[in-house]
Length: 251
Ligand SMILES: Nc1ncnc2c1ncn2[C@@H]1O[C@H](COP(=O)(O)OP(=O)(O)O)[C@@H](O)[C@H]1O
Ligand SMILES: [Mg+2]
Image (tube, rainbow, N blue to C red; front, side, top):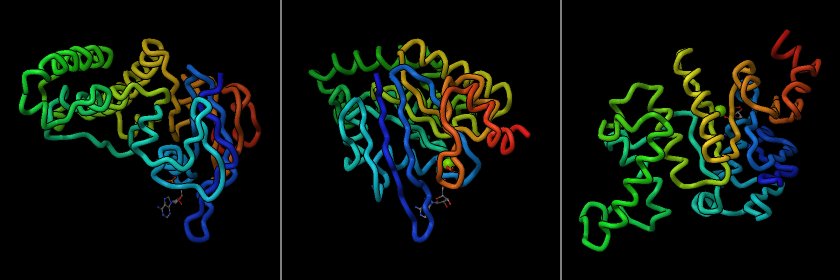
């Protein structure tokens, strides 16, 4: 079953075609890699998929639903969650509260109600705490639930961001260079976590990376972008055998 179906997507900024005639099909449960050098258009693809930018042309379907013209909130409700190239956490909130922000949409629960602890919301609060702890366990962050997000080491902040995105119960998770700035140990741990998230939740994941080695190790399919255009697309081993990819990345 195709979960994400993108056809002929294009956007220009001034004279620059940042994303040009972009096609992508992702099956449910796949871990898919989007790779390309800096400036290739990877983040712009995410911004188009999440409604930050409106395309000049093209159609985006999620689970059969046309989401092309929807705004960011509607697209999140339709089932796409993302992380950003630069960490965006509520730094002055605890680890568990960051996850609860993600959960609050699902539990139809506002922050004000959370602060007041109004009686009838206690039950919801309890359920939210349980759900948040379940998620934090998967990310091995349950031991630091009351730590301020800003006091977490960098690698754990990255994980927390993914946990918060997962809290919205998405159909598709978009990760924008989650390993950026990590040391090799943190990177290894993150890749294990991504594989675990996929297994535990049957999650479909689109992962942006610029390091070919990193994505080819865990993704079964790859799209290589270059100057806004698809250079090569398909099963990882086919992409790795493509002469143009070898020249650009592996030569
Ligand atoms: N809002 C914008 N206005 C103008 N140019 C943009 C904007 N967003 C992205 N670009 C340009 O589009 C190209 C692709 O950028 P980006 O998607 O961030 O690349 P990547 O994530 O692959 O490094 C770059 O040349 C970038 O400067
Ligand atoms: Mg980028």
